[in-house]
Amino acid sequence: GSGPALAAAAAGSGSGGAGGEGLSSSAAAASQQPTGASLYLGGFTGALAQLDAHHLGRLPRHAAVVHKALAELAARLTRSLVSHVALVRPLTAPGRARLTEDLALFQMALVQHKLVGRQPEDLGRAGLELAALKQLLFLEDDAEPPAQALAKLLAAPDPSLRPSTVLHHALSRPDTPPTLSSPPALLGVSSGAWVEWLVAGAPALPPQAASIAQAPPLGPALEAQPHESGARREACAWGAVLACLDSHAQRCSAGKSKQSAEAAAAAASNGEETGAGEVYAVILEQGGSMVEKYLASALKELDRKATGKRG
Image 1: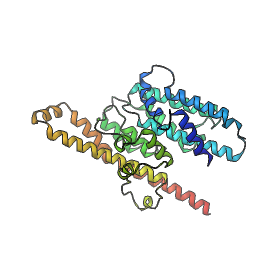
Image 2 (image 1 turned 180 degrees about the vertical axis):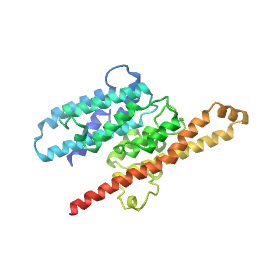
Image 3 (image 1 turned 30 degrees about the vertical axis):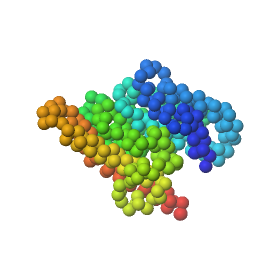
Image 4 (image 1 turned 45 degrees about the horizontal axis):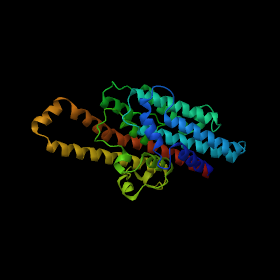
């Protein structure tokens, strides 16, 4: 449809080029700016205004096909933004406040240019995920022990949040060890390329990256889904996080083998290894069940819709 094509045009204009790194780099720098929207939001709103003036404003918006295309555009832009925001790390309290403001300004821009209405549900599931991420950023507390915060997040995330959003955000806490890489860093791809594949399935990941981001066994229902499906990509995102955890464990093991007994004991007494180990353990133990619950619900919904169409 026209929505994905328009989304690609807007994303390319607003992200600083084909690399798609403008959003992530600007969002990461957002906490350094005391007031106003981030650099990304300034670029995005400018690009959206140009797109509206030269293209969208000329379309017969009352036509059903145009309304559908604009809704697809808004939803795809929203999912892309949510995925990029979840990848920003390390994310401290000032950064979360700035990103929460950016998310609100982003939604206002969509409304201003008449892509959607004023309510989150006007964006469908993408709008509900945007609202859930704003709530998550607003309520998060850095003072809460890392293991406790992560366990709470993974045990009962808002059902509107995709597993990839939750998992990426779980890696964004300032207490996450630097040896625990993000999926795009481990796979050797840009954040923009990773998000574009995660949201739209195209362009495909490079072969080496795709071989690492493999979906772990999650039951026959998922196996029946086509490889280009959103459910399959979410499962692959969990596979990529598992690869990040494995790489982290290998680095820690190699580091320990080089430490003297005295240095290892000092690190343990200071709690350095404990904090890193807790983050690793909680994501490893609870991430899989969180992904499975989400996919089971999503696949059940797809089956219900398919049954309704056949009926």
